Length: 290
Image (tube, rainbow, N blue to C red; front, side, top):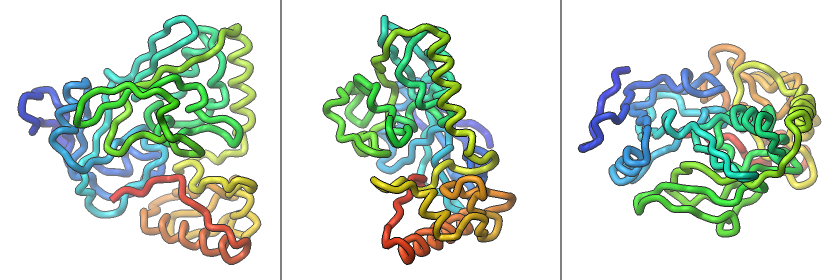
């Protein structure tokens, strides 16, 4: 993978070719990504958006699975220049490439409360905002004041009230890339914030360790997807190298050599079994790209 540039006037643009999808996603599967661009400034990002009609924005790779074979759609990832946090009183502005764990560490040091529920959620702020990550009771958009995005027209700031967000949906406009977000938090002692984070982490202690994309399906309004899958008798059910976790049935684990085809087949089986038993159609939370 040799970095090079094809974008006129953007000498430092990083372009990686034939990137193994398994090396940049938490499920560790998938084929080769023909072209992955890494933008390290808004200028570079805007150049990419003006050059490509179709693209996929890559976050931390924790909720993304790429198809087997060759991925022809250009993939855009934001570089380290988008990994930052700035504070203004009880408000903070965080870049899209900032890990959620880094944001929570900042909140501990600064004595800012409101985001502790996100402890243990992997990935970066951009991805968390895009899917409105959270728990069954709280989600990250609840603490957002506004989001800054880039699209072909330039840079825009959108107030939360103008976003059609909801459960596992941040309401981000099509073909827009999240640059960062303003969060409104409350003051608290660092000790209280740390204690709240530890409590949130303890609530996730049943989540399995290993190669996975986290929760595969969205919960229904009344019943957790993991409960439905468990009651359908699918814990431990395997297709190739992909298996339904014995610890949490809403997790599919790559136990070695799983292909995206294995995972897609397992998803299909789960949906069919749950539909047959409960009459409920599960909806995927994970994105499969290709």
